[in-house]
Each structure stands twice: as C-alpha cells, then as structure tokens.
Length: 191
Image (cartoon, rainbow, N blue to C red; front, side, top):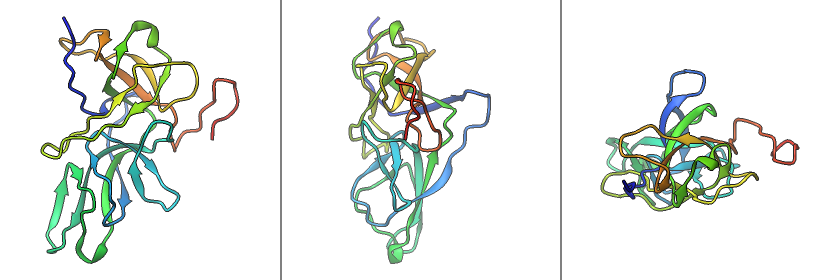
C-alpha cells in the first residue's frame, strides 16, 4: 500500500527518557515577515528571537503556536504566526517551542524512506504550511547520510497505513540542536 503524501511538519510523539513533552516560551518580534506554522522547525537568532529554520540551520525546536495582543488589544492564541502581523504597540509575540533535545518527532519523508536510513542524518525540507489550518508542511529530506544535518532518523513511525517507501513517516530527533552539543562524524565537537 502506498503512503499518502500529506506532510504536516514535525509532530512530537514521545520523549526518549519518558519525560513530559511540553513547550517553552520564546519571542518573535512584532511584524516578523515570515509565517511560522505549527510543526515548523525554528532556530534561535543572535538577537534572542526565534525564526523559521531551513536545512543546515542549528535548530532550537519545533513551533507549537503563539499568543499576542493584536492591534485592537485583544489577546490572540494561534496555531501560526501570520507573516508581518502586528501587535498592539509592537509588543513581542510569545512563541511556544518544543525545545527539549530528547523529544522524538514523527515527520514525513520528502523522498523514499528505507530501513537502512536508521541512524543516518537528514536535513529538513522547508515548505510553506497551510494558512487555513495553521499546520506546517515541512518534511525530512529523502537523502540521508552520515555527515551532519538537522535530524537523526530513528526508524519508521508506528502508525496504520505507514510503511517504508515514498512519503513514509519516520521518527527522528533533532541532531543539530541549539541546546545540545553534538559530535560531528569526524569525532570533533559540533558548534
């Protein structure tokens, strides 16, 4: 049976040590000009703010929604940050981020997923999400390897109608994580 092509970003499914999965608060500047969707990987900027991430970035975690006072002063809770939205008095936006390096995520492969991908690394494929649902469309690259990349593949996500092959849903952890020093393939400490 063929897997359905329906990417929905990185979905937290479990914690390696059995811990509780919960987001922490970070900030997005008012007027930030790029949309961020639930399930999008995010990075930490030198300014302390978060921004949507791309392949090759060190990741802080995964976006779980945001809250902010809109220009009318009403408190908004949203599954997405709408590009260039403004807040009342340019107040920063509170972003909820799954930032624990030990969270395991379910993420669809943009190519063919195979048993031999287990333990390999792969980058995210940043694709704009749905403005109607607020859900991410990020995937993990179908090209895996042993060098450094955003994610480490742990195996196939256990779900009905999910199998290795094109658009398979995999379990992965964030390998290049902002809060966790890693060791590169050559044995040197990562940055």
